[in-house]
Length: 307
Image 1 (cartoon, rainbow, N blue to C red):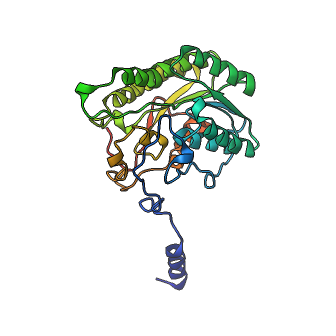
Image 2: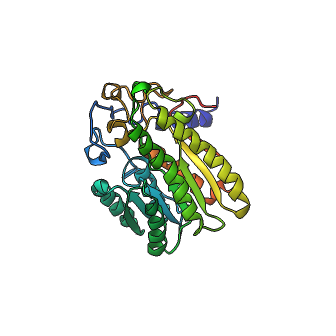
Image 3: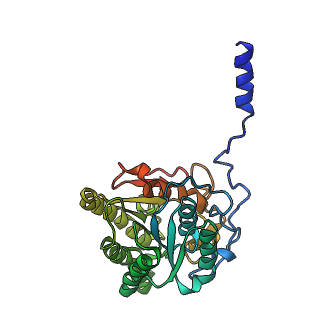
């Protein structure tokens, strides 16, 4: 090896790379419980939504997005990323989540983008009509829809299944997605994108999350079928499938309290994921960079095997 090659090799080896297995190693999940719908502000440890780490490059300049569940968790990380990529963003949330929503709205506005806060229960049909109308009025259009809001409550024994909770999960995860997408399509044109949040549960269902896993499997089918119908119109539909991500969903009956401390240890990386680690997948699917990606699902799950 000549001197120049040796010097180059030393320089390369001295570079500091982010080890994904050790990233967020100081953020260990702690057993805790919050009342539904939960709050990011009360999550211990706090989740990372990219507040200080996500850097935009203008990939969504001039775009106008509506994100359900945009006040916390994955939706909040996507809202921050979209704003830093140049998009104006409307976020939907439950009234009880207003404090989280206002914080995310402030972060969007700090990027010089317009933030629209739209409270409303997606289980009510009229909510989706209002969300779309208010988004279009406030932002001047709508060309990115992120169907992200979801309900997840564990049930250890199927024989004791709570039928009211089943109805809540189906209406939040499935009905609302159908309604909102239908209403949004009336305002969308070529170049628009729809991104649905599915889950690793669609491929590897937990026995205590049967209803939730069933809805996520259905979202996969919805995504592929609608994508085939709309592709010729220039509207792309895709999905992102998160693995174990640290959000208030996990501590509001999403997981048994005794399992929270081991949350994410079954992944190849051996840890839970943070919402910020999902944001780039949504940005990619929303941007022209993914113009030839149709009906696909990006798995962001720390290495859990999927079909």
